Length: 172
Figure (cartoon, one colour):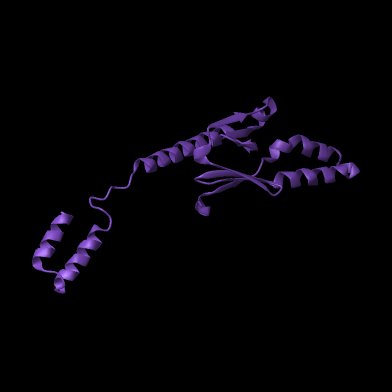
């Protein structure tokens, strides 16, 4: 589990729901607009993106989708003309079997650059840890325990010096 201090929590931008808010304001004199604004705000607040140093997750209406950074194969940004004007967009993160779309993110190109950097770093860390291999023992496991046992028998006088020297040569 990653350190909670190293996480960022994002929600979709208000700008992403501009049309719905506008309709709500226009319908406010009929009191329907207040309900529209309330529903739009509730929907926006029900979506949460958590970006940590090792993973990205999306929580929406209790459903949680998470991708580890090392599994992400492709990142892309899609923006309509209106979204470009408002500096918002959708970020698509694609892995082998799943994908997450972060909708309505402000300044998506800058965030994708940071995510790509984090992905490259995590993959580099993974490759470096794979290259480190355990050293092979220079002796058979248990040899030292057998030698200690043999030495104990010799020190107690239970085996002769000749038997001890002969058995000790087998360990060399």
